[in-house]
Length: 291
Ligand code: GLU
Image (tube, rainbow, N blue to C red; front, side, top):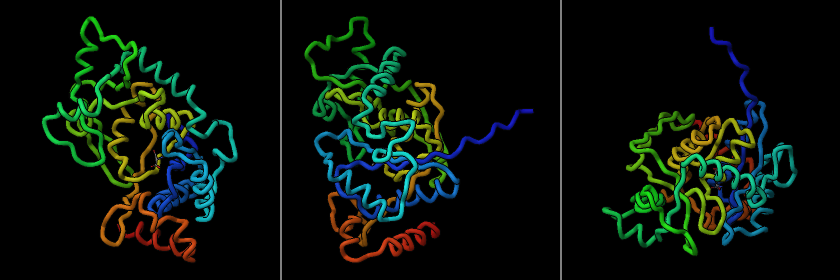
């Protein structure tokens, strides 16, 4: 008989990017994350995704913490209160990302790519639309696989994850149900290390969720295709894949997805207009029950 292993204690996380004020959509996702951690009697970790040097501002970090506390959220470890598995700010974790990247490199999972966005756009057969990065056509992968790889001396380059041919990623999302993503159709060789010497979101996120021992990742449904890529990274790094719960995205009255650029529905603005957190939460709870 297979022994029944004790379930790992639940560890969830809140991972705001301090690149703008949080809007009601973020608020709802974080509130759901808080609910799920509370229902499981687990821990909740506050992690700051602050690697976007051009857009991150310290006041947004302060505002995010304040807005989430205003909503009634609290966390057990995090960028402002510390904890055993910190630091909890991505900008302070470069050494652990580097280490994971070196493991990928020695494992033959990554290759350098000197293509510019323009090169990639002009070599694509079909125009690229939407938020997703275009599927990389593999130009540098083919060069790298030849016996004499190109010299990187003085050349601006990124490192891409080499997806084995015909890879398919299937997983069951706890909110959205079964998901299936096909490499070369839904995504291509993606960037794990940026040209500015920092890890790309996909790698930093996997390293943090794994090392902070997150058992369930709650985030917006816009990241479902990222999850497929991240699962490949977990596998390459021999780390256990957490459970995923992708919350439906929130739209405004005209059906347009909320974005940080649209300040009208920022939690700050709602608060300054006298909206109470109880009222917001009551609306979210209702919307959550009805799907
Ligand atoms: N920091 C990301 C955001 O605010 C979320 C990343 C994640 O949850 O994995 O959109």
